Length: 463
Image (tube, rainbow, N blue to C red):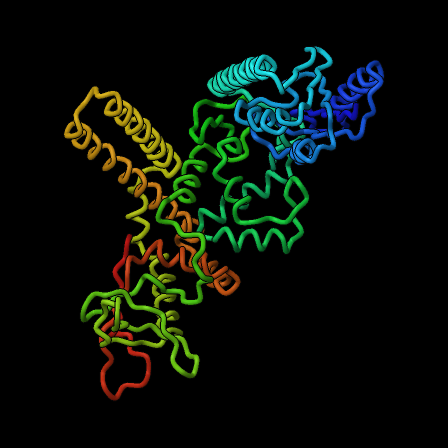
């Protein structure tokens, strides 16, 4: 008899293959007792059959069975072959017409060419599937309990900012986390931040360069503020040290998970993009360079463009004028008075984030109630509207607090900002301007005037 041995283990993070070696040893001993020739050994290490992980050697085994190269299959236990009934049926279909036997070191033989053998295989497969489902339920409940208690679940590589124990802070990495938090809240883009970290040679935990998605995942993680997260929701205070405050996490999550935030936009080259309006028709001015390459803003007119075409202004002198106005605004008593009456950023952010999460939970409960026919569609719509309004208001509060973060270091000290302005990334410059300027209304040019005309520009300030 030409026999094949199949061995599999679901989890082998160290890839030492000790588990499959034990299976192979028992299967070889069975083949020796039966005086069978082992034509090949098929091993899938660290491959969960229940999770549907790729099993290339199992697929090769089935192909060799169909080709007639295998007369019997030896496994340590039947659940090493299959955990899903559908997969078992495909295996039976391959073995049945060729009379291929399947032997288990701890479960006996199965002749899949007979109805009784197929019945027994299906029973064993159903038992294995139920065992996997039960294990999954237990694991889900365990992770839920750990989350509610604020404990770590363990597993995986250590998180950035922490030592190998996953609880103690790694000071150099924690400094990077705090720097990244401050820069993102101040208006830097994820892309520019990732580029800067890679330029400075700051590695990730795995030693690879920073990417936008990796950086975003780190900053919206609740664990860096000492909070436990479960299914993307903050559920408890964690039992480890915090790197940043919960209020900062609330602001980061609001900023980086905003549905209106696009991460695939082209690199910004116009400082005042989205901040200019036409005085004639009220449409946003768009960036349109002249044929000679000089940058300018225009009220664009054409297909799918709502503008009137009546306003155009050169970008560089306009941007210099607006930046100078922002510098002057930073030192104005009116701005200081407006901000002094605002609530503390940390407490306001925490309250707004709590309102957002509470609203989301209420929407989930409302959807469940409608799905179970406890309320009518009309009642569902009536209850949903005020909840969504509260969520939107909370998000606006968080967005406003994030906007103010860009100018907080420079309030009453425009001289410091002047010194650093040219070295700031364009995204940070835009965030500083947008924190104070709601829009600038640009009027039509006066015929005969070639120099920049300040009277054409009317700033409308946020604060």
